[in-house]
Length: 175
Image 1 (cartoon, rainbow, N blue to C red):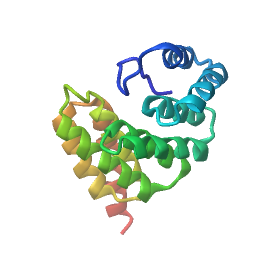
Image 2 (image 1 turned 120 degrees about the vertical axis):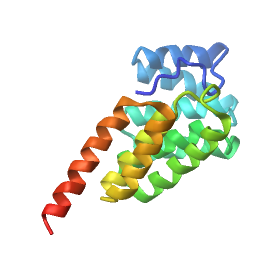
Image 3 (image 1 turned 30 degrees about the vertical axis):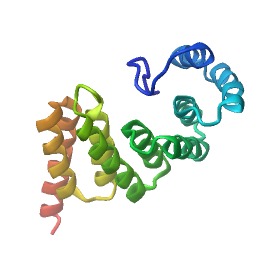
């Protein structure tokens, strides 16, 4: 479950705030009901589409979540959060190349904003590294993990790096 409490995605006001609070309490179906009403009135609401995508993702409905993330990206294509969330859902669906592409888009946009404006860079690096590992592209994963560690100081990326290096070592031994 993605924590939207940092205020990313312009979460504010009325029904959207109610839906966000329900989501954060893991009351997904109630949050979905509130959002359905809001999205009927405001289908172009970026934050509501993102939150609905998160709910659907948490409910295991990744294909439906992807539709919501695409709607959000149609509204705000330059917002890295939509790309990040879509990449994560694609990774869950096993669409590794597309997850990689979305994560790279998210990373490019987030880096332009900087860590003060987009503090979740480590999450994007994590998704990107995972997609590369799943594709067995260990050298690329190692390079991205090292870059991510340099930029974010992330412990999870350090763990990935150890795993990647074990995979590279075992691959060499197997030859």
